Amino acid sequence: MLLRTILTATTAVAALLIPATAAQAGPHHTTTSATTTSAATTSTGAGETTALAGANPVIVVGGLIGVSIAYEPIAARLRADGFRVSIYQLPNLGFGDIRESARALATYVDQVRASTGAAKVDLVTHSEGGLVSRWYVKFLGGAAKVDHYLSLGSPQQGTYVANILAFVGLGSCAGIVACQQMSIGSDLLADLNGGDDTPGAVRWSTVRTWQDELVRPVGNASLADGATNVLIQSWCPLRVVGHLGLILDGTTYTVVRQVLTDAAIRPNCFAL
Image (tube, rainbow, N blue to C red; front, side):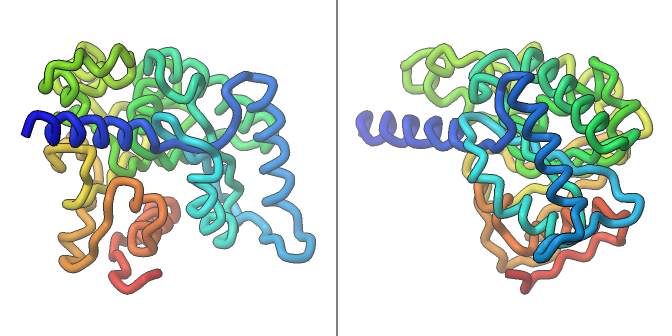
């Protein structure tokens, strides 16, 4: 029984470390990524789509231990709908201090704004990326540079899964700083959620799913203070979407597009 518990814990934490996505960790690489992606999505060449008139550039912000290809499906959907899109991979694969990752994100956002000429960007975030982005908005001046913030399965109030190794006696998140910061009751979450957890004129939205195996309890993926919080199964009771599935699922994507275009939230339960 103990062995089974340890294996379950190890599997869950490994899964927690797998969400993420593209742009490179260092400033030199992120500059290149931002410029290349913007040029491609604003081109009118064969097979490419002109960006939506007046739409902000979209940055897809990944989570812990993510690789760029993991977020290409949602980026491709956004590009097909006419958005200018780049993908941001957390520095050091997101293992380090979330606050340091937020500082790096701040630099990347400025690079995207400079390369596109846009005053503001929209952030579509997944898992840990949602916390990194919130820290940037709340404490690093991002409130003036972000229009829409949307999180997919981000542990806004923390998750019990981040504590699971300690629960079975294997240490506090195996020493992974970001994992410790995503634990319920962490100092970082106390700072993020203290006072106004949705500051500024940013339009805040979250999406969560009952089948999220990594954010527990599921309600911890929500924000307060006027945010739009969407539970997929409240609209589509039979829709099964896991944590990683949030970046692949068609129904979830319909919510993403509605948020970014300020449309009424009406998820398409049959979207592929």
